[in-house]
Length: 122
Image (tube, rainbow, N blue to C red):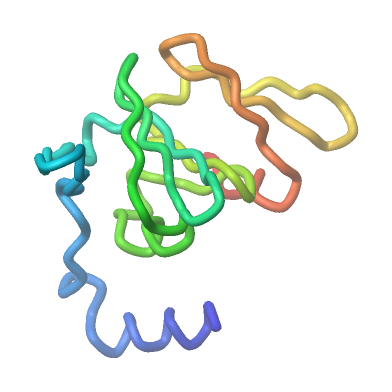
């Protein structure tokens, strides 16, 4: 599937791809817009995604995979089946043994990095 998607993007030209610049989040009867550049990390929660923006957390009704497909892969990277991070927010990568790592974010948050996704971090 990834190969098919990559082939389709190559035919269409990667420059033609438009990535999300902001995400609409519904809060009761209001809708707020969260700039993707302000999102530090994302966490999967069943059919929802938690958008962590500084000290705030917003719930978005979608899956992490669906949202990840709309985000610029040069900016956001999946690090675990349940987590994705904005690369600029990652301050440090620590080995915890057994091929497992922890991503330490600028705000001090520690997130697991699984072996499967480790090679996605620079």
